[in-house]
Length: 97
Image (cartoon, rainbow, N blue to C red; front, side):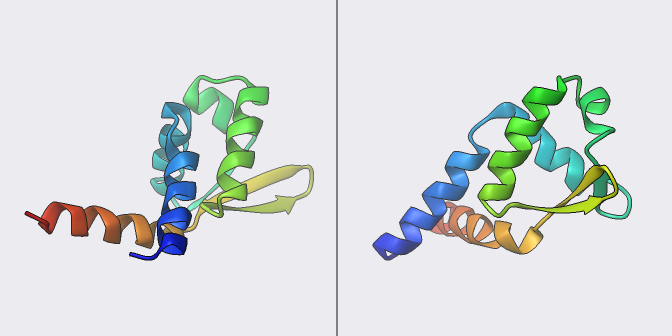
């Protein structure tokens, strides 16, 4: 693995290294239709709007979520393809002796 590949993976892992962000990703990945309005997430996850905004911003900046503005609300979708490097890393670590 190159230094650049390791740095990119570390950035993704850092973005996910928070229980609230893990819960957000898990919740959003299971939403029917694959997209959820930010207006529903605080109640569904039991967190405040400022906390939600902070964590969503972190995940969008790490390119793990897409954000689409629809009227006054933002809708978020998990970028499954962005998780592929993490899946590959975990698979390779599980196979090594």
